[in-house]
Image 1 (tube, protein in one colour):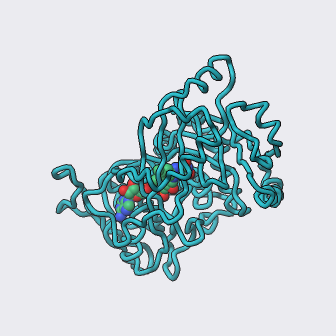
Image 2 (cartoon, rainbow, N blue to C red):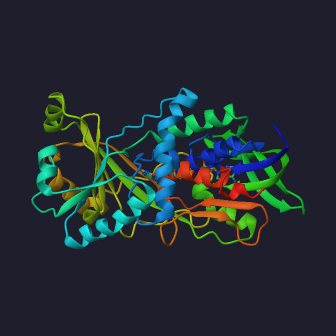
Image 3 (cartoon, rainbow, N blue to C red):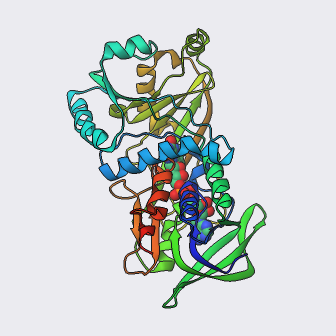
Length: 388
Ligand SMILES: Cc1cc2nc3c(=O)[nH]c(=O)nc-3n(C[C@H](O)[C@H](O)[C@H](O)COP(=O)(O)OP(=O)(O)OC[C@H]3O[C@@H](n4cnc5c(N)ncnc54)[C@H](O)[C@@H]3O)c2cc1C
């Protein structure tokens, strides 16, 4: 294991892996350390949606870069990340919601994101399983869709290794000390004990000119080690997978293409196809916070129990929107931690008051943002890395 690098990235989720890839691309001597396995944080259980829609110019640029970058990863690495470019249909039940989309259109045009507006009739004609009688219209992006979060992370990791980046698993960063010229990062070898991941006696100090933290749900621990505040707390986020929907299967069997990701912003939900059935994901208001004081050692790539009663309203709204799914039973469920900041935007950039320490924390759309966040850190022309 190297003990001296130009850049050390902490965390092997989608975000850290992309940063390591882009720093490697920039030609920096880079190492990534991950306390467990790559993708073992929030990344492994994400639904993989890559929505281009965002009201912020900066975030739209980040998301657009990711969507374009992921499309080229297979050519570069030989690994298929399962990017289904099915498009994204964002529906509006009110005039106010349509106004919001019209305002967004200026962001999309400035950032070069293609979009079209659709009337309820146009939606019905194209996707007859979607109920449209209460809609004002929708915004449609045909260039995004969904990806396999673990596969895209592994593809970026392979790309990073091809660029000379070292990736070390089962090493946990435990302290950071600025020496005046570089950071001394004390790392501990993590070992399995009774299903838990525990610290061993083996330690190593890595000298790194720059450190980037992408520690996901461990942001509060990272903040304590750095002596700063990182306002990012995980909350529970749930999606359910439904059994096959005969109407959907019939629709697809006659040669129709897969439905776009269906976003019902007024019902705080998203729906996409999954092997002849549907996935329903919900943005709960008042979702319980988790890990305010740190992630317990017993929590690794785990999930929380499904709390179906909390998403009943959105579930009913989904049945209203796609009535053919009413008879489909529940096949699977995911309730995992997803990091949120107060304004929903990630914390990306220099750590306050700390030299050569960079944060990439608090991602609630981390699969969508990972590619572009990597570019910000590693770009030759204008990213943080632009300042040698
Ligand atoms: C149910 C669910 C569905 C989701 N769906 C979507 C979606 O459709 N689209 C989307 O864009 N996002 C989605 N998300 C959000 C997405 O999963 C996260 O935003 C993203 O995975 C965050 O990636 P990350 O790399 O920042 O964090 P993580 O994936 O959590 O990775 C952080 C890594 O850092 C490691 N680590 C922490 N501290 C240390 C340390 N001190 N030393 C070494 N390693 C350390 C951890 O072990 C972990 O592997 C979803 C989330 C959930 C819960």
